[in-house]
Length: 106
Image (cartoon, rainbow, N blue to C red; front, top):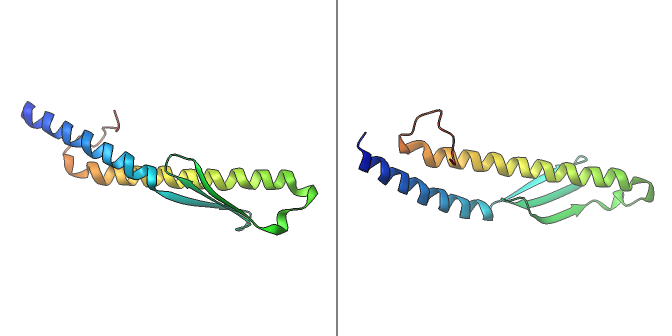
């Protein structure tokens, strides 16, 4: 492979990664727990955008359960966001002709 061509591809990849990171910051994913009693929406970088809690969970004795359900919903949404980012990165890098075992970003 020609060195100049490789450098050009690296620059293109860097530009595409920057665009992908910007787009990823605007992606929202939703996680649920407790059979839908708790729903949380997060942005691509993990910040919580919204939280919905079914009113039936507001009982004094259930506070610890509610806290656990919120954490579970957030974790599910975060995992979905990470998976989506991996898929988008693989799509973006598919046409770059990079070795199959190469992990990105560097």
